[in-house]
Structures are given as C-alpha cells and as structure tokens.
Length: 171
Image (cartoon, rainbow, N blue to C red):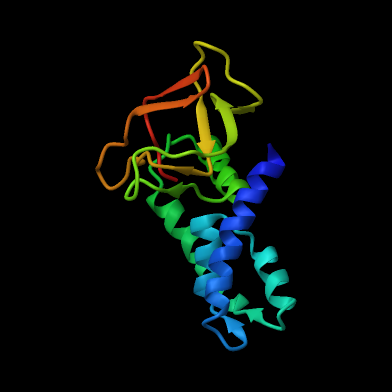
C-alpha cells in the first residue's frame, strides 16, 4: 500500500513538475515548489533531486518562507477541539502525509488511496464493522467544513467495504 501511494504521488508530481520546468531557466520559483508540496503532497527533496539532474535548483528561501507562513496561518485559523494534544496530532499528520487533494470542483466520485486510519486519537491499521473512526485519503471529492460551510456527507465504497462519511474536516 505504501508503494502504491508513493507511485500515485510520484506520477502526479512529476507531470506537474515537468510542465513547470519547461517554463523556467535555472531556478524553480519557491511558490511552485510549495504548491507541489502543499497541494499535491510532492516532497521538496524529490523536487530538488529531479531539478538537480537537470542542472536546475529550487528557490529554497521562498519555499521555506511560504511553508512558515502556511504553518502560522493554519495554527491561527485552526478551530480544533481546544485540546492542544489533539490539535498537535493533526498538525503532525499534515506534516507527515501532506495535504489531501480536493477534486470536488471536477467530480463527485473519485478513486483514492487511504493514507491513514484513526480511532479516536490513535492511528490504527484497521477499522472493524460498526466502529467509528477517521480516514485520511490522498484525494477526495468531499468538501471539508470550512469558512462556515458545512462539510459533505456520503460514503466510501470499495468492493464489499462501505464507510459512511458523516463529517469532513479541512486541516
């Protein structure tokens, strides 16, 4: 499963990066590298490796400045549980897994990869029938609660597996 997730991430990121490379001379703008990371979950070190093979580089100063701004904004806007331990868990997850790509403007159905499962505040390997938990995916058409708008509801289906989506959060 890890390999499958990585290959999906790699394929999407490489396509976008190659398109951006065709537009630059020597340095990939930091905002482009940040968008690859923040929107598509494409790691900075992989971006740097690909660019290095083409004798190009990233504007790291701009990338890290945008990363710092993003973290500060996320913490400022976070209306989490009020429990700082749980809030720290969610920030750690975002750091580890990157952002989930939102597909809802293009479709209301999509295939995705489950990146992580949670039961309460603990990461788990599986959720059993009847259990309540949280799923983090690489991409989704579900709109996450944000800016006063309520998050989508629906279901995730894979074969005989069915997961009712009761609440979607945007972090």
